[in-house]
Length: 235
Picture (cartoon, rainbow, N blue to C red):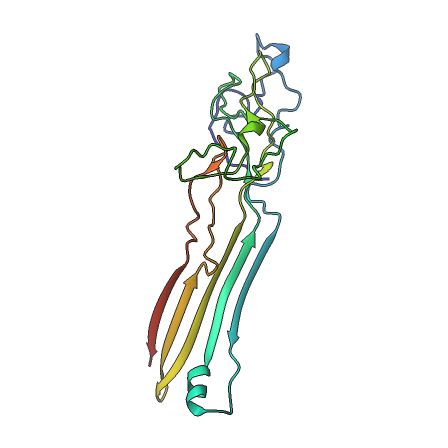
Protein backbone atom coordinates (compact mmCIF):
# COMPACT_ATOMS: atom_id res chain seq x y z
CA UNK A 1 0.00 0.00 0.00
CA UNK A 2 2.50 2.67 -1.12
CA UNK A 3 1.64 6.19 -0.04
CA UNK A 4 3.47 9.29 -1.17
CA UNK A 5 4.60 11.29 1.85
CA UNK A 6 3.36 14.84 1.35
CA UNK A 7 5.26 16.38 4.27
CA UNK A 8 8.17 15.52 6.50
CA UNK A 9 6.41 16.10 9.76
CA UNK A 10 8.10 16.21 13.14
CA UNK A 11 5.07 17.23 15.17
CA UNK A 12 4.19 13.76 16.45
CA UNK A 13 5.54 10.21 16.70
CA UNK A 14 4.84 9.60 13.00
CA UNK A 15 7.89 11.60 11.96
CA UNK A 16 8.19 11.54 8.18
CA UNK A 17 4.92 9.66 7.75
CA UNK A 18 1.72 10.92 6.19
CA UNK A 19 -1.03 9.88 8.57
CA UNK A 20 -3.92 12.29 8.89
CA UNK A 21 -4.43 11.80 12.60
CA UNK A 22 -1.58 12.57 15.05
CA UNK A 23 -0.10 10.04 17.45
CA UNK A 24 0.84 11.64 20.73
CA UNK A 25 3.39 10.19 23.16
CA UNK A 26 1.83 8.32 26.06
CA UNK A 27 3.46 10.73 28.52
CA UNK A 28 2.42 13.89 26.63
CA UNK A 29 0.90 16.53 28.88
CA UNK A 30 -2.07 18.81 28.26
CA UNK A 31 -3.51 16.68 25.43
CA UNK A 32 -7.34 16.77 25.55
CA UNK A 33 -8.97 13.37 25.55
CA UNK A 34 -10.98 14.28 22.44
CA UNK A 35 -7.72 14.81 20.50
CA UNK A 36 -6.58 11.21 20.99
CA UNK A 37 -7.86 9.17 18.05
CA UNK A 38 -8.04 5.40 18.68
CA UNK A 39 -7.20 4.49 15.08
CA UNK A 40 -4.74 6.99 13.63
CA UNK A 41 -4.68 5.15 10.29
CA UNK A 42 -8.43 5.25 9.71
CA UNK A 43 -8.20 7.73 6.81
CA UNK A 44 -4.97 6.29 5.42
CA UNK A 45 -6.19 2.79 4.62
CA UNK A 46 -7.06 2.55 0.98
CA UNK A 47 -6.00 1.22 -2.37
CA UNK A 48 -2.47 1.69 -3.66
CA UNK A 49 -1.52 5.02 -5.20
CA UNK A 50 -0.82 3.12 -8.43
CA UNK A 51 -4.09 1.13 -8.37
CA UNK A 52 -6.07 0.84 -11.63
CA UNK A 53 -9.14 -1.40 -11.53
CA UNK A 54 -9.22 -2.12 -15.26
CA UNK A 55 -6.08 -2.38 -17.39
CA UNK A 56 -5.90 -3.55 -20.99
CA UNK A 57 -2.83 -3.50 -23.22
CA UNK A 58 -2.50 -4.85 -26.76
CA UNK A 59 0.38 -4.80 -29.21
CA UNK A 60 0.20 -6.24 -32.69
CA UNK A 61 2.00 -6.69 -36.02
CA UNK A 62 0.03 -7.75 -39.10
CA UNK A 63 1.31 -8.28 -42.64
CA UNK A 64 -1.38 -7.70 -45.24
CA UNK A 65 -2.37 -10.75 -47.33
CA UNK A 66 -0.52 -11.10 -50.63
CA UNK A 67 -2.26 -10.88 -54.01
CA UNK A 68 -0.81 -13.55 -56.28
CA UNK A 69 -3.14 -13.00 -59.18
CA UNK A 70 -4.63 -10.04 -60.98
CA UNK A 71 -3.36 -6.87 -62.60
CA UNK A 72 0.40 -6.68 -61.90
CA UNK A 73 0.56 -2.89 -61.18
CA UNK A 74 -2.21 -3.32 -58.62
CA UNK A 75 -0.33 -6.18 -56.96
CA UNK A 76 2.85 -4.07 -56.90
CA UNK A 77 0.92 -1.28 -55.21
CA UNK A 78 -0.92 -3.36 -52.60
CA UNK A 79 1.46 -6.17 -51.66
CA UNK A 80 4.14 -6.15 -48.93
CA UNK A 81 2.47 -3.67 -46.57
CA UNK A 82 2.34 -4.32 -42.82
CA UNK A 83 0.80 -2.53 -39.89
CA UNK A 84 1.70 -2.49 -36.21
CA UNK A 85 0.57 -0.66 -33.13
CA UNK A 86 -0.20 -0.55 -29.44
CA UNK A 87 -3.51 0.02 -27.69
CA UNK A 88 -3.66 0.89 -24.01
CA UNK A 89 -6.54 1.55 -21.68
CA UNK A 90 -6.75 1.83 -17.92
CA UNK A 91 -9.24 3.25 -15.47
CA UNK A 92 -8.56 6.53 -13.72
CA UNK A 93 -5.86 7.17 -11.14
CA UNK A 94 -6.69 6.84 -7.44
CA UNK A 95 -7.12 10.29 -5.85
CA UNK A 96 -7.50 11.79 -2.40
CA UNK A 97 -9.22 15.11 -1.75
CA UNK A 98 -7.11 17.32 0.52
CA UNK A 99 -8.17 20.77 1.66
CA UNK A 100 -4.66 22.24 1.35
CA UNK A 101 -4.51 23.81 4.80
CA UNK A 102 -3.94 22.83 8.41
CA UNK A 103 -7.58 23.00 9.41
CA UNK A 104 -7.21 20.57 12.33
CA UNK A 105 -4.53 22.74 13.97
CA UNK A 106 -2.16 19.75 14.24
CA UNK A 107 0.43 21.23 11.89
CA UNK A 108 0.53 18.02 9.79
CA UNK A 109 -1.19 19.61 6.72
CA UNK A 110 -2.81 16.26 5.94
CA UNK A 111 -6.43 17.29 6.48
CA UNK A 112 -8.96 15.89 4.05
CA UNK A 113 -12.11 17.33 2.59
CA UNK A 114 -15.46 16.65 4.21
CA UNK A 115 -17.54 14.58 1.81
CA UNK A 116 -21.34 14.56 1.75
CA UNK A 117 -22.10 10.94 0.89
CA UNK A 118 -25.72 11.75 0.00
CA UNK A 119 -24.41 13.36 -3.20
CA UNK A 120 -22.38 12.00 -6.07
CA UNK A 121 -18.70 12.85 -5.87
CA UNK A 122 -18.60 13.36 -9.65
CA UNK A 123 -20.45 15.70 -11.94
CA UNK A 124 -22.69 13.95 -14.47
CA UNK A 125 -22.91 17.17 -16.44
CA UNK A 126 -19.28 18.18 -16.80
CA UNK A 127 -20.25 21.52 -18.37
CA UNK A 128 -22.26 22.79 -15.46
CA UNK A 129 -22.24 22.89 -11.69
CA UNK A 130 -18.48 23.03 -11.31
CA UNK A 131 -15.85 25.72 -10.91
CA UNK A 132 -15.23 26.24 -14.64
CA UNK A 133 -16.32 29.79 -15.35
CA UNK A 134 -17.41 30.93 -18.80
CA UNK A 135 -14.39 31.27 -21.08
CA UNK A 136 -12.15 29.31 -18.72
CA UNK A 137 -10.28 26.40 -20.31
CA UNK A 138 -11.08 23.58 -17.93
CA UNK A 139 -13.52 20.77 -17.26
CA UNK A 140 -15.34 20.13 -14.02
CA UNK A 141 -14.86 16.61 -12.67
CA UNK A 142 -15.55 16.49 -8.94
CA UNK A 143 -18.76 17.99 -7.64
CA UNK A 144 -18.06 21.03 -5.40
CA UNK A 145 -21.41 20.52 -3.66
CA UNK A 146 -20.29 17.08 -2.44
CA UNK A 147 -17.20 18.39 -0.66
CA UNK A 148 -16.59 21.08 1.93
CA UNK A 149 -14.00 22.21 4.45
CA UNK A 150 -14.51 20.22 7.66
CA UNK A 151 -15.62 22.20 10.66
CA UNK A 152 -13.12 22.64 13.47
CA UNK A 153 -15.14 22.68 16.66
CA UNK A 154 -12.31 21.84 19.00
CA UNK A 155 -9.78 19.14 19.75
CA UNK A 156 -10.03 16.08 17.52
CA UNK A 157 -12.02 17.80 14.76
CA UNK A 158 -11.32 19.42 11.41
CA UNK A 159 -9.63 16.40 9.83
CA UNK A 160 -12.30 15.65 7.23
CA UNK A 161 -13.57 12.20 6.23
CA UNK A 162 -12.20 11.41 2.74
CA UNK A 163 -10.35 8.09 2.85
CA UNK A 164 -7.04 7.72 1.02
CA UNK A 165 -7.39 7.12 -2.75
CA UNK A 166 -11.17 6.71 -2.59
CA UNK A 167 -11.76 8.93 -5.66
CA UNK A 168 -10.95 8.37 -9.33
CA UNK A 169 -9.64 10.58 -12.10
CA UNK A 170 -10.53 10.21 -15.80
CA UNK A 171 -9.59 7.03 -17.61
CA UNK A 172 -6.75 6.77 -20.11
CA UNK A 173 -7.14 5.37 -23.63
CA UNK A 174 -4.60 5.73 -26.42
CA UNK A 175 -3.96 3.93 -29.70
CA UNK A 176 -0.68 4.36 -31.59
CA UNK A 177 -0.30 2.74 -35.01
CA UNK A 178 2.10 2.50 -37.92
CA UNK A 179 1.92 1.50 -41.58
CA UNK A 180 5.12 0.35 -43.29
CA UNK A 181 6.46 -1.21 -46.44
CA UNK A 182 9.92 -2.38 -47.44
CA UNK A 183 11.03 -1.99 -51.05
CA UNK A 184 13.93 -4.03 -52.44
CA UNK A 185 16.57 -1.78 -54.05
CA UNK A 186 19.64 -3.77 -55.02
CA UNK A 187 20.78 -7.17 -53.83
CA UNK A 188 20.33 -6.99 -50.02
CA UNK A 189 19.75 -3.25 -49.74
CA UNK A 190 16.19 -2.09 -49.03
CA UNK A 191 14.23 1.11 -48.58
CA UNK A 192 11.62 1.17 -45.81
CA UNK A 193 8.75 3.64 -45.73
CA UNK A 194 6.90 4.20 -42.44
CA UNK A 195 3.85 6.27 -41.55
CA UNK A 196 3.33 6.50 -37.78
CA UNK A 197 0.32 7.91 -35.97
CA UNK A 198 0.17 8.73 -32.26
CA UNK A 199 -3.27 8.89 -30.62
CA UNK A 200 -5.09 7.63 -33.69
CA UNK A 201 -8.48 8.17 -32.03
CA UNK A 202 -7.60 11.87 -31.55
CA UNK A 203 -9.77 12.26 -28.47
CA UNK A 204 -8.97 14.37 -25.47
CA UNK A 205 -6.89 12.59 -22.83
CA UNK A 206 -7.48 14.51 -19.62
CA UNK A 207 -5.09 15.02 -16.74
CA UNK A 208 -6.27 14.37 -13.20
CA UNK A 209 -8.39 17.05 -11.58
CA UNK A 210 -7.08 19.24 -8.83
CA UNK A 211 -8.31 17.55 -5.67
CA UNK A 212 -8.70 20.90 -3.93
CA UNK A 213 -11.48 22.16 -6.19
CA UNK A 214 -12.16 19.36 -8.65
CA UNK A 215 -11.46 20.86 -12.07
CA UNK A 216 -9.21 19.62 -14.88
CA UNK A 217 -7.10 22.30 -16.55
CA UNK A 218 -4.79 20.29 -18.79
CA UNK A 219 -4.41 17.35 -21.15
CA UNK A 220 -2.15 14.34 -20.99
CA UNK A 221 1.04 14.58 -23.04
CA UNK A 222 -0.08 11.56 -25.09
CA UNK A 223 -2.45 13.70 -27.22
CA UNK A 224 -3.48 15.10 -29.63
CA UNK A 225 -3.05 13.00 -32.78
CA UNK A 226 0.35 13.40 -34.43
CA UNK A 227 1.54 11.81 -37.68
CA UNK A 228 5.10 11.39 -38.85
CA UNK A 229 6.67 9.84 -41.93
CA UNK A 230 10.09 8.27 -42.35
CA UNK A 231 12.33 6.65 -44.96
CA UNK A 232 15.09 4.25 -43.97
CA UNK A 233 17.69 2.88 -46.35
CA UNK A 234 19.27 -0.39 -45.24
CA UNK A 235 22.40 -1.64 -46.98
